[in-house]
Image 1 (cartoon, one colour):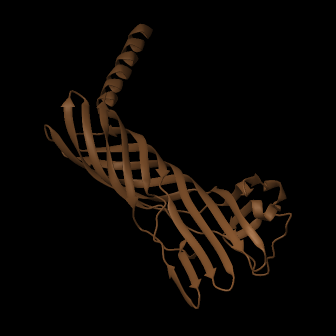
Image 2 (cartoon, rainbow, N blue to C red; image 1 turned 30 degrees about the vertical axis):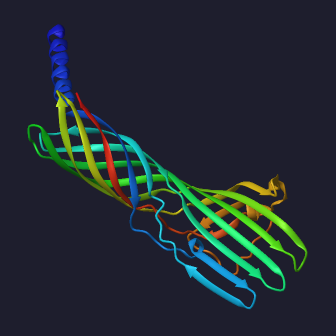
Length: 285
């Protein structure tokens, strides 16, 4: 009797495994996302003040950006409950593009003064995407739609270069370079895709899709990772409130920074929306 029960259980597990494996598949993809749901924030504007002789002009130019633009690499594990409906769990990594902003003050008259500050911001993010998928059950080409949530852990890098010269006060040329990393916190957004599977042979298909992600990210802390002046490191000279930042939901109006404590600032939601094209391969089991 025990042998009969054991045989029955093994056969049941084998059959269930066969059914599950018939609906199981993996996907690997690469793609590029263009910025969407862009925002304009004051510190990312371009500012220029030019004065030469007796004439001067000044302007501020807004910079619309999303840190979600860039290269997208990842893979999905999916399961089809039937020929048309299934679920997927995706894991992807964003290698973000760069956003540049600049503040330039250039005075050329009875004395010369230049203050040229450039900031380059880029980001990376590890994202998990649980979603539902609907597939047309055709022979060779199968259109599909996918929609779900996206959860991300991000890192933002800000590189600042500051060139300064003032012959009125006898200040010689000076160049400072500083870099900050902003991390912490979790972002939650929405994702949707439309695409098509092209069956090559058996359980192997190629696919292409247009994908959209709508999300923002607010880091919780920041730290200085580089500080040089004319090529020489001066990180040890910086007080703690310059080297460390805490981003908070609420900030006391009477708050005054202490040199021995991290600086405190309000959290800021930075845009990470994108739309773009992904291509890859799907392997069924």
